[in-house]
Image (cartoon, rainbow, N blue to C red; front, side, top):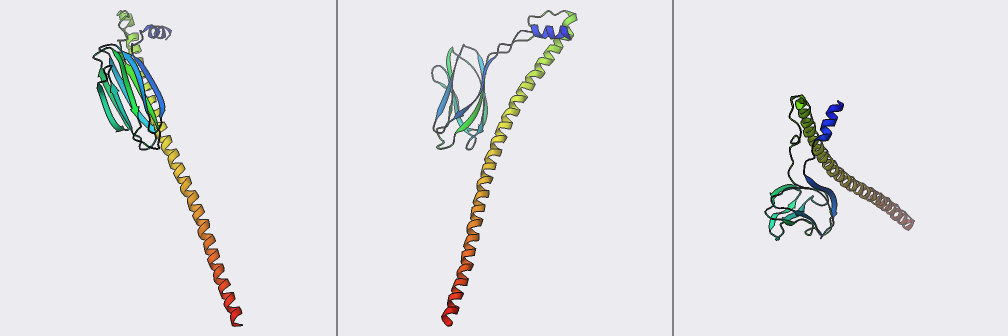
Length: 207
């Protein structure tokens, strides 16, 4: 077990760089992110609106010459992959300019680079074959676990936001019904009181 852990520690790190963040996008606003990339580098973009309005946002990606590579409007979530044709600064923008009063919470995951084989620099001796395959299996399982955790975090944040909005609406509706009940009750009491006052007045007049 110790030897297996040592072999896994010696595995070369895969050359994939990424940015994963969650940010707030105010209404009538736009936020852009910049990344300098070399030529023939593949990058992947994943985003999802976690909360706000109809859970939609505008997104576009441009190359160093401001050519539009990706442009989608009012998307709740999407993915985009592209291989760069030139070296320079690439721009990813999210826009909420179509919204007049609701801000959005947006999750973004930007990755670039290719994953190198894990066992490229290791010896291919027969004694290590089982250890190498175990390390590769562990690595693949950990990648699946990391992706699953990200998905569950997004799902949990999305559902929690919906639950909070539902609780807020139910609370306002309950308060409104309570106030309306008191107003109707007070009105009925005053109406009944007016009936007795009118009858008392008519009795006094007849006497």
